[in-house]
Amino acid sequence: MGRDIKEQLAEPTVIALRCAGDQWPHSLLSAAVIPDAWMGLVETRDGRRRFVPAGEDPRLQRDDQLVLVRNRLITVPLDVADCRAACGNSVSATCELLVRWNADEHDLAALRKALLTQQELTLDGLANAVADAGGQTALQQLIREHPAAKLVHEDQRDALLDAARERLKRFIFETGMVLDRVAKLELSSESLARHEARQRQAAERVERIETRKMVEQAALAATQRRLDDLGGLLEKLKTAAEADAQVQWHDLLPALSPAERGRLLENLWRITPDRKTAEAIVVVAGKECVWLDPAAPEQVTRRVTLGDELGGLRSVTACLDRQLLVVGAGRGVWTVNAADGDIVGKYEVPNAGEPRTGFNAAALAGDRLFATHSQLGCWCWPLDRAAEARALLEPVDGVPKTVRAATTTEDGRLLFAADDCVHVYDAEGRSLSMLDTGGKVIHCLAVLDNAVYAGTANGMLLEGTLDETQELWLVVHRAPAAIETVQARRWSDLVELVIPAGVQGVCGVYGEEGVVTRLLESRTPIRRAWACDDLIVALNELRDRLIVMNANLPDRTGHDVPVARLLGHSIQDAAIVVATEEGERDETTGAVRAAHPPRDEAESA
Image (cartoon, rainbow, N blue to C red; front, side, top):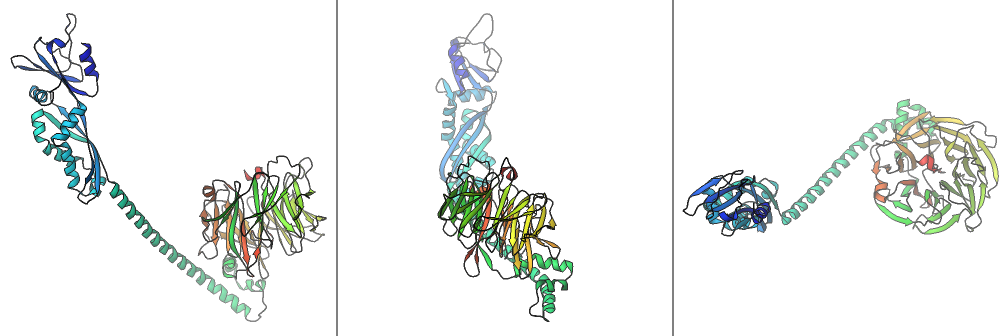
C-alpha cells in the first residue's frame, strides 16, 4: 500500500477519503485489500459502482475512483453555550452523536457526492457539517423547549435524538448517513445551580429550625419527666425535714429507698444552687492554650500560643483566687492570666536537659508555685523570683518512677504523689509528713477539708486523712481501669467524688452512702473528667474530643466536641475556669482542690 494512502488511513481524525485507481498500490505477489476498519466504493469512468467490503481487493483500474469510509460508529461532537431555557435560565450543553454509513453502494455514493468535495473528510469537517445542517439547532431547540431543572436533572438523550433526526432529515437523506443514537449529553446551568444552592440553604435552615424545635420540645419533655420523677422524692424529703429545720442530707436520705436514693444523687448537681459556675473551658493542645465557651464548646473564644523555650506543653491548672492558669511544659511551667490570656511568668528548671515528659500538675501555696514532673520531680519557685528554682524531691536512678498530682489544702499545705506515697509540705516547702498507700501507685489526688482522695493505677478510689497518724486508707470504690482524675464536690454534709469510668462515662461516688451513680453517658470511653456546679467535662481515651454536659440539659448525654479536629492537635489536658457566687474567679477542675492526671508519655500513649 502506498505511503500517502497508508498514512491517511492511520490518521484517527480521517473518516472518509478518495483516491484514483493509479494511487492504490498494485503487486504481482499479493493483493492490496481494504483495511479492517474501512469499506470501499469503486466508481468506474462509465458510471458503474461496486461495493468492496473490508478484507477484499478493490481490483482498481487506472481510471477508477476509490472511496474509503470507516465501517464503524463515528462520534460527532456538538456543543451549545448559554442558550436560554424555557424557565429563563442559561444552559450550556455538550453532546456526542454516534453516526455511521451502511455497507451500501448508494449510501457511500451519496457521502462522496455531498461531503467528499476534498480528498478527505475529517471528524471536524463532519461535525461542522452536522452542526450547520441542523444538529446545533436541534440541541438549541431541546434547551428552549424545556425548563433548566428538567434538562439538568433528567436524561434527555432520547428527546435530543428525536429532535436531531427531525432537523437533520434532509442532511441524512443527501449524505446517506445513519444517525444511530446520542452517546453522551451533558447539560449545565450556573444560574440554576446558584438558585438550587439558595433553595438548599433555605431548606437546611428550615430543617435546622425544625430540628431545634424538636430538640427543644424533647428537652422540655425530658426535663418535665425528670422533674416529675424527682418531685415525689423531694416531697418525701420535705416531709422528713419538716420536724427539724437544721436537718442534714445524711438525716434525709434514709427516708428514701436505695433506688430512689440513686435517682436523687445522680440529679443532685442539677437541683442544688450553683456556687461555682463555668466561665470557660481551657484546653492545652499542641503549642496552644485555648479557651472554649461552656455554652457552645465548639466556639473558640481565645487562643494563646506559648513558645518552645520550655518544651512541649503537657498540662493546665486553674489556680484558686489568683486568676492564673499554670501550664506545664517539658522543662518548666508558664503562668497565664485566666481572664485575658496574657503570659504572666515563665518558671524553668535549671539544667533540665531534654526530658521525655512534662510537668503534669501545679499548685500555688502562699507566694510559691509548686509543680510535679515524673522525670524531674517536684519543684518550687517564688512567684516573684522565677530564677530561684528549688527541688523538693528529685528522682535518683529512676526512683521514684512517677511524681505527680500537685494540689493544696485550704490552709496552704502542699500535697503531691510519688509512686505510692503522698508527700505533705508546708507553704515554705518544708516536708511535714508522708502518707503511704502500701504499694498502690497514685495517679491523682483531691483534698476536701481533712480528707484526701486518691485514684490509683489499679482502679482503686482511696480515702485517707491528713493526720500525721494516718495509717489506713479506706477503699471507697473499685473501677475496672486506672483512675486518672478525681474531683470532690460538697453539698452541705454530702460529699460527691466525680471520676472517669471508661465505657460507663463519668460516675459520681458517694462513699458514706455506698452509692455510685452515672452522671454522664458517652458513646466513647472516658479517660479523664472535670466538674463544677453547672458543668461536667470529660476527655475520651483517644484524647481527640471533649464531652461537655451542662446542668440545664435534660438527660445524661453530653455534647461531643471534636477538639482535636478543631485545633489540629490532640488534647493534653483541660481545666474549667469558674466564677464563684461572689463573682471571683476560682480554681477548678471541679473539686475544691483539683488534682490532675499524669502526663507521662508512657501513660498517655
